[in-house]
Image (cartoon, rainbow, N blue to C red; front, side):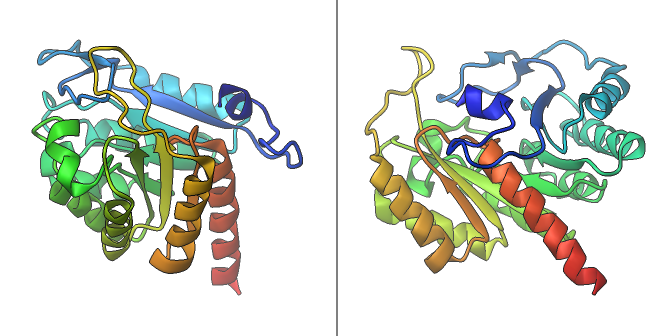
Length: 265
């Protein structure tokens, strides 16, 4: 979906909107080893770039984007998992260009809910944390330090701070449709507002194999279920949908603006 992400026109060719961007913080080396992810791993990754907050914020402020997603690898080697680094970046972006909407797609910070709340109160607009897969497949898919309850707790803690929350599920790893629907309801019970559903694709032969390729019709059926039955405010669902997905960010941008307008009435 790179063409859609980098253009200012949506996949249907009909709508044009403000550009979005995604930036990875805290380096390119993760302290965990999830079996679906091909990012570099090490228990002793390089030190965090001391200039990254300022450099990132300055660049984003100059790009002319209306919506930015900040994400990162897991950094279990840092005292707060990198939460303060995220928070400082958000605050600096908002200082330089208050109109930019900022989403943070975060690790679980080792279940440190104070770290979660620190970031959720930084001025960001959307707090995203991915559940990744259904409860039954967590141990097979994710690093042992991650788990279903811990990720749900992260979303609950963020929601308690009054921000929009978002999560994502990869499909095609052996889950059943009923398990996906159960996960949707669990996410809604955690207060999650927005969900993305996408097809898992094996990054290398060393990673988990794809069990099933879901049809576009099934993705559409799950979108309808998520919005009309589970009650999400928005579900982006399709084979090429990912956590950071431009069509979803366009909807979120409009949703936030409308909510703010209603609060002012």
